[in-house]
Image (cartoon, rainbow, N blue to C red; front, side):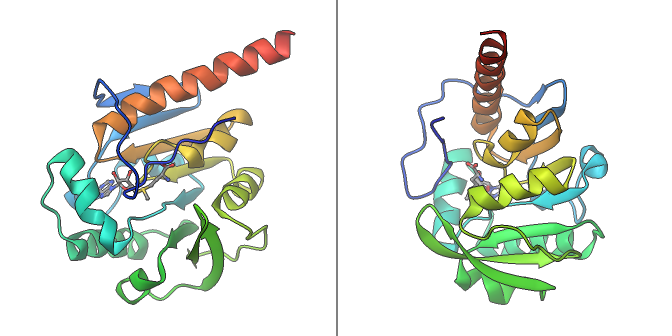
Length: 200
Ligand SMILES: C[S@@+](CC[C@H](N)C(=O)[O-])C[C@H]1O[C@@H](n2cnc3c(N)ncnc32)[C@H](O)[C@@H]1O
C-alpha cells in the first residue's frame, strides 16, 4: 500500500478541498489547532493512547504557510507540553533531537527512524517494549496493545491506519483542513479495498 506522509520537506499534495470534520464507523478526523487550549477536546477522551509526530523546528513555518497560521515554534512546543502535562494517558511523541529541550522530561526515550532520518521517541505514562525500527513499526505495535489512538498532529493519517485495518478506534486532528479531506478519501479507499479483498 502506498504511504502518504505530510512532510514539510516535500511539496504539499494538491488537495482541492478542505474539510472541518469527517466521521467514520470507528473514528473521526477533524480540524483542530492545538494552540486553542491546554487540553485536548473531548473527542480524545475515548482514546487509550495518544501519539503525534510533531514538526521539526525548521518545518513549522512550512506547515504554517499551508494554513495561514502565525504560530511560532515556541507556541507549538508550549501547547504540546501543556497537553503532555495535562494527561495521564500513555503519550508517545516521535520528534527531532533538537525538540528535546522544549519537551517535558519523558519517562522513556529511544531512537527510531522517521522517513529515513534519525528521530527520538519520547514516551510518557507508559513503557514501550515493541519494535523500534521506524515509526511504522511503532504504530503497528501500538495498534496491537491499544484499542483507540488519538493523534492531534495527524497529517495524512498514517497513525490511524493500523487501527482502521483492525477495526479499532482512531481520533485524528490537524490544523490543516486539507489533511482532513485527504484522510476521508484515503481511509474510504482503504476500506473499499479491504471489502473487495475479503469478498474475493
Ligand atoms: C510531521 S507532520 C505529521 C505527519 C503525519 N504523521 C502523517 O501521517 O502525514 C506534523 C503535522 O502537524 C500539524 N500541525 C502543526 N502545527 C499544528 C497545530 N498548531 N495544531 C494541529 N496540528 C498542527 C501539521 O499540519 C502536520 O500535519
